Amino acid sequence: MIERIEGTNAYRIIPEGQRFAVFYTKVHNRLLGPLMAADRLPAPPEVRQALLVLHRYTDRTIDLARLPRTA
Image 1 (cartoon, rainbow, N blue to C red):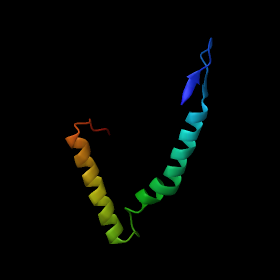
Image 2 (cartoon, one colour):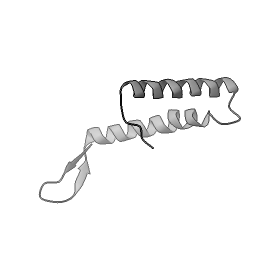
Image 3 (cartoon, rainbow, N blue to C red):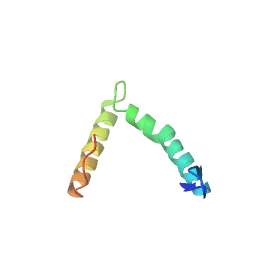
Image 4 (cartoon, rainbow, N blue to C red):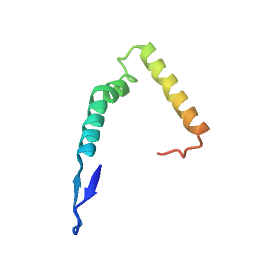
């Protein structure tokens, strides 16, 4: 995503890094933000329940892969 400017302690973002950052910013703003807000009222119970199932499934999959838990 970044590269060091030779002979300095400075870095610059490379084109692929910029595209990556823009893509994930859009994913967060358009998908993750609204999706995570859906687990609180006034979201319909069905949506909150579906998110809870996804959360549990994801945790179980991570545990089965023996990946460390984060805070």
